Length: 461
Image 1 (cartoon, helix red, strand yellow):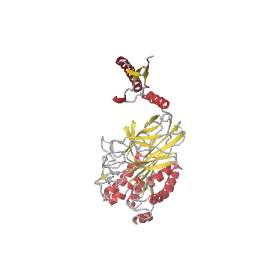
Image 2 (cartoon, one colour):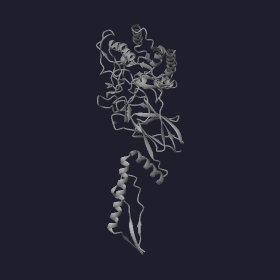
Image 3 (cartoon, helix red, strand yellow):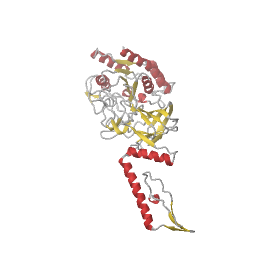
Image 4 (cartoon, one colour):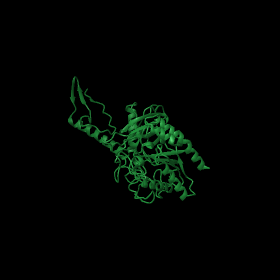
C-alpha cells in the first residue's frame, strides 16, 4: 500500500529563515523498495499552507509585541526547556532608580528608550523577583556613539552583595553570580571613563557616555518598583572628586556618598577632571565648561557672567538643564526635587592652570550665591582643596556671603588643614600625590563624614 511520509517541520516561532532552510519537507511515496517524490502540485499545496500559517503567526506577533514575547516563551519552554525566554525591563520602568542630577534621556531628562550619563560615580539600581532557580540577567547598552578616539567607559556592579568591576561597556553585559529564585538587587556604577568626548554640544550627544536601554531578565521575572530616598546630595569638583588616583569606587566622594545613603540620601557626583571655578574641564584644551565663569572682573568683584561657558546649571552640552521650571536644581527635571546638601571642592586647577585670580575670586562669590538661590533649603559645604589651593579666597567668599546674608546659616566650610597638604606634597607618599591614592581618599572620607553628619544634624535641630 502506498503512503506519504512528511519529515517534521522545523520550529517557525516567527524567526527569520534563510532561503536554504525555509522549508525542509521531504515527501515520498513508498512503493515496495522504490521511493518517488510527490507530484509537484502536492508539494506546492504544502508550501502554500506552510507559508500562510507562518505569515499569519508573524502578523499576529507584530500586532502585539507583548503577546509575541509570551508566545515565544511558551514555545521555547516546550521545545527546549533549557532555553529560557527573556524580557527586557525598559529604562522608564518604575523598577529603575537613577542617581539624581546625573542622567539625561531620549526625551530631555527622561524618556522610554535610554538614559545616559558621562559622570563617573553616577549609578542606577534595579530589583526584580526571579521565578527561575537558575536566573540570568544582562545589562543592555547602546554603544553606537563609541569610536577609536577613546577606550570604552568602564562600569562596576553589585549583585546581591557581590561586586565585579573594570567591565568595559559593551552592547550586552552578562551579570554573573545570580543564584536562586526570589529577589535580586543590582546596582551599577560608571566608575571610569577617559576625560575626552564626554560633554557634547547643542543638538549632539557626548560620545564617551554610558547609555542604558534596559535590563534583560528571564520571562518569568517580575520587576520590583524602586523606592529611592527622597533627599539627595551633590558633590561638585574636579579630578579628585571624580576619582582620579583612586582605583574603581574608592574616591572620597563615593565613600561619603555611600555613608549618606545610610542616612536616607541619594547622591550625585558632578565632577570633571581638569576643571575649576572658571577653568575648562577634560583633557586640554577641554570642551567641558568651567563651573561658573566670570570675565572682566576687578579685584575679585563685578565682571560679566558667561552662561554659555558655564556648567553649574547643565547636565551636559546637549541642552539638558539641571534646573526645573522655577530655576532650582532638580534631581530628574521635575519641580520640587532640590538637593538637601551640596559639597564643592574646587580651586586646585584654577591655581595650577593659571586662571585669572580676580575672575576666579569673583566666580567663587557669585557661584556660591547662584547655588544658594537655586537650592534655597540646601546645606552648602565648601571643602577647602586638599592641597590648600585658594584656601584663603574660599574662606573670604564664605565670609562675604554671611555678611550679605546674615539670616542664612546654611553655608559651612570643611578644611582638613595644612597637614594633609604637606602629606600630598610629598608625592607618591603614603597617601599619594596631587591625586590621592586609595589610602588618601579613605583618610579624607573618614575626616569628612563626621563633619558632614554634624552639619546635617545641627541643621535638623
